[in-house]
Length: 388
Image (cartoon, rainbow, N blue to C red; front, side):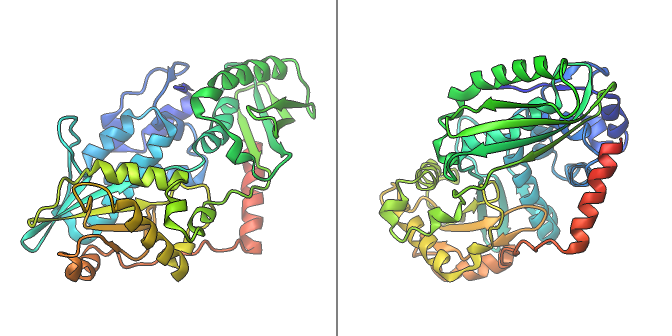
């Protein structure tokens, strides 16, 4: 489902602040529609985290135009996140190794990893894998906000959106995303027809794609211009990513969505077969998982479980090993790493040296709890947005 964003005057004003983006992206006229994710960012620079992300893209894509081009051409919100992870990792490595970091061009004719770095007489080949768990549910959450923000109606609005669930395990019930695409078109049609006739404080309850979840939309305010504010509140879930890694049985883990995805990607062997001239690293990035805190990657029992799981998944892949090192990690503005899983016995002796050389020895940062001051600041920002 390709989503299109309306190009606003805010987009044209914002792009002037980012010289690399402006030089490499041709923004259409105001009022036209554009499917690329960079337009979504340019239209929302009033959010601090988005303006900071655009500054980051603009600054570092000058040194990494291969990833930069992919970001500008991307029209899929989840793929955009995966490309951002590549940029975050590049920047992390670039700050340590400068021009020694090579971004490799992807080819349909041969297996190619994402990065290479020279290490003494050997070449380090790095493949970054950023899977998304509960994919349909995660995409559902994001598409709801997209649809409401970019409805093709000529009014503005401030909406509160709630999910009402009968079960805390509702995320498990979502089918393959392709099966719920018709629901999105119906939701867009129904909500558009309702909003143009509705009044302040009106509310609407809509069935979701699954029977145990409903969507409630409340109108806080309506505007004559196209100013739009969406606040999306989710029901409590019992589907946190950590539950997969609590499983203390590698065979059972292999049957979960995480086990299947990891094995499929290992089996691709993007860095090629084992070679004494290089060392192949598979970075398992959990940053797109449906959890609020990845610091469990620092806890020994999870390190042990993941190590056993990876070794089990790789055991019957031929040629073995599919990679020399597998490293669970969290890649973002700040990067953190768990312990390496050593699959190649021949190269196991130098793994610690490689990890230190790459700077992959920092733990995953715990997500800080919000202070009273943080909460007051957030509320103040929300009131400011509603006044725009």
